[in-house]
Amino acid sequence: MARATAPVGSWSQDFELLDADYIEDPYPIWDDLRQSCPIAHTERRGPAWMLTRYADVVEAAHDIERFSSLEVGVINTGVQPEADLEVDEPYGLPPISADPPLHTWTRRLILPWFSHTRVDGYEAMTRDICRRHIDGFFAAGHADAAADYAQQIPVRVVAHILGVPESLSDTFVGWVRDTLEFADDPDRNLRGQEGFGSYLIAELERRKADPGDDLISELLGTTHDGEPLADRLVLGIVALIMIAGIDTTWSSIGASLWHLATHPDDAARLVAEPGLMPVAVEELLRAYSPVTMARRVRNDTEFGGCPMREGDKLLMNFPAANRDPEVFERAEEVVLDRAINRHVAFGVGIHRCAGSNLARMELTVALEEWLRRIPTFRLAEDAEVTWAGGQVRGPRVLPVVFP
Amino acid sequence: MKIRVDPDKCQGHARCYALAPELFSVDDYGQSSVVGDGTVPAGIEAQARLAIANCPESAIEELAG
Image (cartoon, rainbow over all chains, first blue to last red):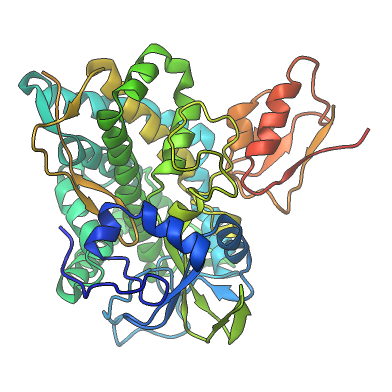
């Protein structure tokens, strides 16, 4: 699925996150970079630096003084926000694309929706979604574990939380892919932004007239400093939950199923030792972390000996950090019962993924339900597995058989 | 054994709660704190050590004592 990009001569000086080989198999590239040039650079789509060592990634994530979240996309889209935007109005997708103080209070608005207690309440629904989809392909003895299963789950859970119809799931998935996976394609990117924008504006108006018990209605009824939230702010928060809550978790579920399809001993062990699941889920999150995030350098500075200029992008490659042998023994291996696993798949610092409890539950339930019905499975003969990458890495086509 | 959670470091990953639910409580905003005064009941010291070792923010510490 990767688009053609100019060949990479030097990964340390000219890296390209959308390079087909990198998307397919980034691990040797990270290993080389960590050893030879742990802070890589590129001028493609503007100047950007990429951190691949755990210690650097963690330090940068905590350094909110020097590195701003106003620009978290790893690929410059080239798509401009609307011209009539008022500058003093909150903009973007808070809290992910905001710095304090906007970040702090918008994050507090959504965190309770993703607390342990709330997430426990979403579990039965999630299990039902998984079972329904397995029912749909089980008799056939084969499925696309990415498109027919992984992709179908988080979008429905998020739709429930937001109070939008599950029947629009394919449309939402399309907009999310336009926004994230095709960030380098201005037409698709704009289509995704406009799709979300026009749909959600209509949803906001509908709820103002007839509020429900969903997150959108609650945000519309919330005040900050005595004032109702601006529509644009609510729009940004809701769009964030869809964008960040769908593609990421789906990628984790898909990558985990890819691992189990290609490592039958691990699948068999999880079937035999279901109590291992919580630890195994952390290990799968570590080994197949989907998300790389960016920051914007606020002012000229130096980091790790590299001269960074105001406005440069700084990429925190969490997936690479999670395979850093300085921190993880046998970092390149999936060790299902890895007891010490301080991975940063959900980021660290004030921008720790607000939906991490939800994502963990969805990944756990998706794997449990799959293994309960389909304990043995493998890649289909001549299966052409395809991966997407860039901001979020995960399989998009994953044909498996369970005859 | 006695432990504490540094509230300035905790960012709500909830790894501690998953590993040792008897020792930690987590509020609606994800903030973790120790149950009681942080004294670890006999027999679950290993869980406390796992929580310390898995916190992505290194926010949990064992108090000297």
